[in-house]
Length: 74
Length: 561
Image 1: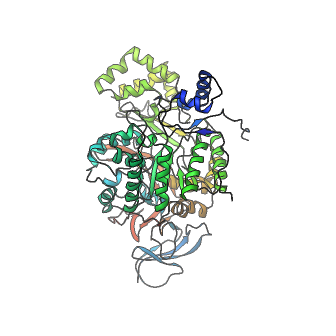
Image 2: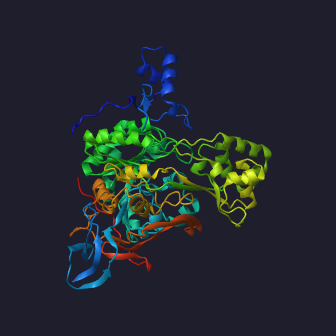
Image 3: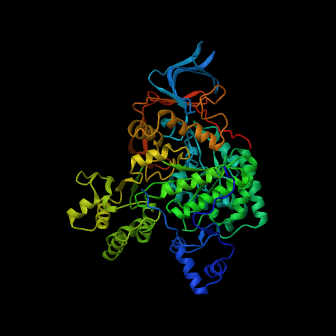
């Protein structure tokens, strides 16, 4: 049995205090122009963008990469 | 002399070992002999033809309020459940300061869908601390209770209403840790949290305002005291659920705690989800984590009406707002063509964000104030077609004609593939739970999941052996939750037992009963094939005589860290 953490199924972070989309985008995608970074981060986190009450909470999951392809279920 | 001797039963001891014919001897509240037991006894039960098993343990309930007015947790006890875990999903009823009772009550009622009149009539709120809450229910208990303390309650106590607004300071986190330790010392078996729930004002519950370091600190306290963490994740999205499983696994490894999440629910809306989640659980288990999903055994049979907001209307804001209107205004609105058009349009665009596959055309007329034989039991889609109207109009017009007293049913939501569900329930890493006893009382009957396991998946699908099914409902739960001397038939263990007919044990049909405080109704299911239920050595229920006057339930002891 291994006791380390396996790599994530999809990379994610959790918000920091006071985070908003530009702050998250700047931190996670620093090489992209801000607008593009924000749009890209949002597109990976539609569960936050389209939630009924539009607020990011400190316990949320923020994906920092797109969904990975999965093998079809037999 | 024995106090109670159970003779000639098929002993299914909870360990999963092959069942054998024999006797159980009980003295006081303990099992003292197992096998071929001789000698006199004050009372003898002939268990010929019956399975003798440890009492079932239900790890996911919201009996926090009901236990105040009904220490038997009816009807769970008659289904053979001798231990219940209330306090799930970040919500317990203590510790709670008087100034937060209205807020917590509104939150609890919204999330767990309980009528306000039952809360108002049934709760005396004589407690503030967790110990005081346990004292308030202890004397009337007919079942054992292994309570969780809710993370949202810890935040409210320490931070006041700021708990709904902001992250905690270092001092506040330390105060929550101390309070959690106090609750664990008083009798809590762990802490519950939520990553999804929203309150009566559509705001995240306080637990969701916690930074990762706050939850980590509380898990450190759980680790120091041997408590479990239960949490509600985004169970409807595979990627989110896998991320949450990873977080729970990290907590488990770092602090040496057991974690459990609920529900894990199978729906045709996302048929691959459960398999993906289980592979993640398998991987994390191989890496030393204890992360146990809880899956209910049954599909959901929902009910809804137009008198109060229900989860069915969560993504129908117009319908939600309409149900909240004062009665006269509601009647006016429901007759207004413009309002009706809006409600129809909303229903056309309906989607369920939590992965349930619902079609309102498949709803049926379930319950009426004034029974109309031409409508009772009929499908809304068929009635709408007959009337040449929209399904929303059919629902509205039927309700209006019945003075809004009509309840509509939506049966068999999720868990539709029995072969798949049977395999999942039999999986060694799958916990059986998430039944929600005591909650959603006017929306669906959350009772009889244990009997359904035997009728559907032991007798019907043959997905589990009798011994494995009993183990899943007893020893596995007691082990995960760290309950001392429960969940097995062994000398020295608590004499919690259920005697049932393996050929007939089942849940009855969903029925409405008027037994809530404040004259409210709720949906329940009665048991069939459960002959005797014994709690801490004392008969608490029998099929022939019903519930006894015994109140021998306890606050279940936890194995210390």
